[in-house]
Length: 117
DNA sequence: GCGCTGACGCGAT
DNA sequence: CATCGCGCCAGCG
Image (cartoon, rainbow, N blue to C red):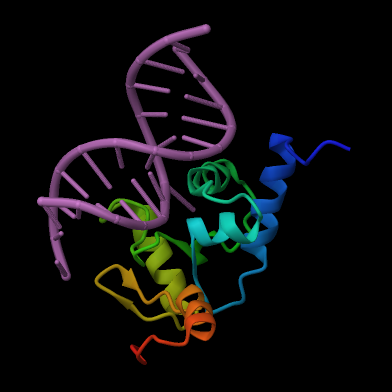
């Protein structure tokens, strides 16, 4: 069988990966793409979320790799995402969130990272 | 078929 | 630590 290269399938994987994010935790677009097995298709993740219409999808748990909210600061979407994150117990500082999940895994693998938290 | 755009990422300055 | 620039992926005019 050919590899799963259908756009619809990729899309489904992205949504699945986003839904897999536990409440109170966040993940970057690249992280989602990676977990979905799409490599560096971070932009694809963004595209999927933009096109998504499922209100039950925890899209607010997806942030940029630097922990910044993807939306432009000041926009209604930006405010909403910040509120949702704060509502879930995620510490948002100046529109920025601490991404620990991915870094944590790397730390376990490479061991050498100081406890910066 | 070409080029632009976008809820991106990362190394370099 | 803030900015810039280039690379990546897919949809659209």
